[in-house]
Image (cartoon, rainbow, N blue to C red; front, side, top):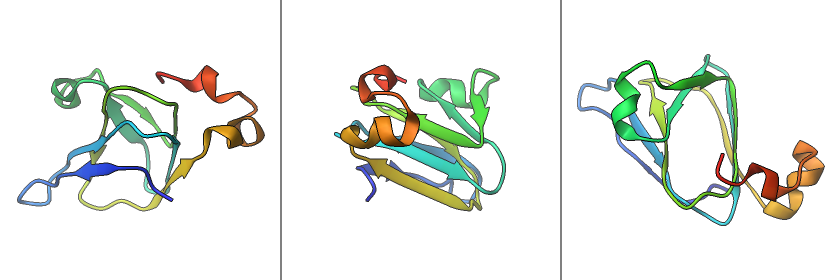
Length: 99
């Protein structure tokens, strides 16, 4: 089950920003194509401030988070109920809040 998501691709299919909106679920993204680049502020997406990782675990948050969306990507994006956090991540959901 995926949480509320808004995505936009460039007109030429170039990388664009994927906006992850706040939801009552934790986010788990696993990339099979290489690192995922993400930022907290859209203006940082073009610079070197983006973090890069193959697996993203996002906690509950009050503001959108942004992931650079390439032209082609393979992987999975899951919405995880907060009560499942301890079983899946060995942490309570509260420790992932704001990440």
